[in-house]
Amino acid sequence: MCTLTAVPAAGGVRVAFNRDEARTRPAAAPPAVVRAGARAAVYPTDPASGGTWLAATDAGLVLAVLNGNPPGASRVGTVSRGTIIPALLATGSPGDAVSAAEQELELEAFAPFRLVAVGREVIASLVWDGRTAEIDSRLLGGAPAVFTSSGLGDHLVTGPRTGLFRALTAGPPAGWPAAQDAFHRHRWPDRPEVSVNMSRATARTVSHAVVEVGPAGVRFAYHADAPDAPAADTVCELPLAAEVRP
Image (cartoon, rainbow, N blue to C red; front, side, top):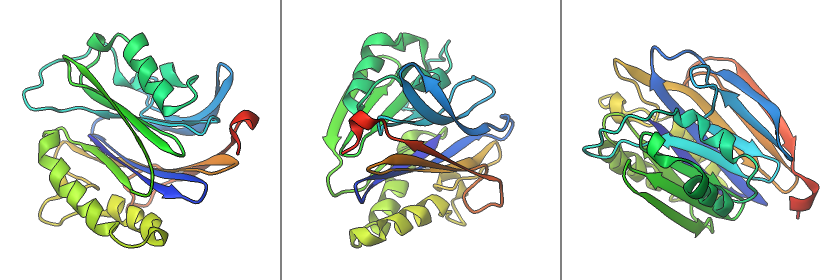
């Protein structure tokens, strides 16, 4: 349950993420800068798993994990999906991240998920459906990207949410950041359960983050509730490592 979008920005990329969770799940700790081997990274921490769903590193890499809910899925993981990103923080590119996930993680221990790795020019993903893993990689180019999931079934929300995103970002690139923000705030009054800013009896959008990767650094802005709800904001800045700056 979550929605990620990525739009090209001047010299980099802008990633936004709505995290959807059970209403009973404890609130996450806000993002902080940490060391991860030779790399520095910034991410919020989920107290239930000790892991995270979204991180950025000084390699200019953004990593995100969305739960997978394919039709007929029944696999229950023995290891939290929140541990996936911390295991990949030392990687330096989207391709390296998804390759490391496929080769080094014991995928059979996890419930279905989608790992998305975003660089300034490339987006790569690994989809684990509980049986097989599929890797995809493409240039970010001039087109916005969207990935989404729902505990109701990913197939029930992908069409409506993707259609809305395409409509909102149909204009010129200068308007894409504002369209991206509008998308993540959007809720259909008669369909809150399938909305991007979702709400239903047992779950809701619990946080919103915007990660901007530019030529010199990363800005991680975190809002500790749904994007249209009042809440505490945390902003962390992380300079890019010297070897990855243009």
